[in-house]
Image (tube, rainbow, N blue to C red; front, side, top):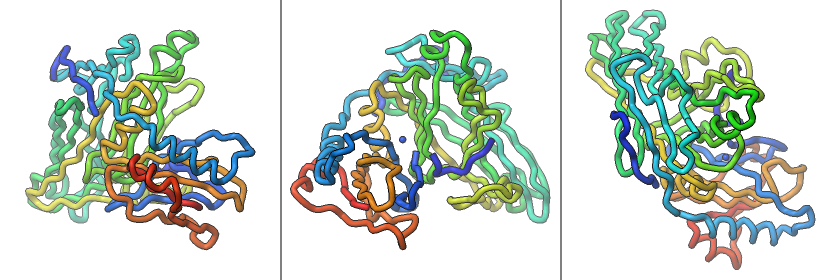
Length: 365
């Protein structure tokens, strides 16, 4: 199973407190353009059917205004190095220590690269530890990973360096996320100790978070740092009833896209060219939250966009929709995917002051 993005160390060391999917339907979907990346977090906001347009707008503002920037949960983790599997083998939150986020027997640190030298064929490089190096057609690619803690956040850096004498083109950079989502027949085991995933794959605005399969918190958020984006994901063998899928996100996917003829690609399929001696580093951060409001605040704090929608992301043709967008960055514009059938307007009015105090911008579709 595969889908393109944008559709829906040390053992015992503790890290202290740290700071939903874009759907297109009825030709009313829109993308937020901010700086380089585009993206928006969408979540349905339930309202009564008889709610008027003005009431729906007021409800959207109120939801933005009450979002908490409260502290998040501490993350306890173990980093396992020097043996297979290398990487972070366990992530737990203090508030619910029985909940394990990483799949037993696996670890964060599984990275796969497909690259080639001038005129050469694609060559696979799979991380077997902290540092891995493969040479082909004059290009020698080195992959180095590091996990560290800074300001209450677990950070994961992935560096690619061309140590050869010829340029190297990186066609794919895939990051496996083997989380604890293999479900069992035991309700207690599945709902209390296993997790479910929610993801938004859209350039530099991308994020993935996990929560207990039974709902509620704590939440573990993975966000892309500035200059790092995600454009594609695969979920081989995924079954929503059993879980147990091989989920991977792609920073680059041009090599994969060249061999995939199914479906449509709504985001750019990029590659990276490194000259001799050149290096590129990608970074991700993991933070924890206890509540949905804290999770939303973490997304904003990590450079993402929080979105509130009324009456919902799926509506009949002709029904007005209100969007409230919240970001630490300035939102320059919101553009419709189908501009001929969609009108986008900034909504002024008596709620404008409230919106600005919440760091929000309001749009009407």
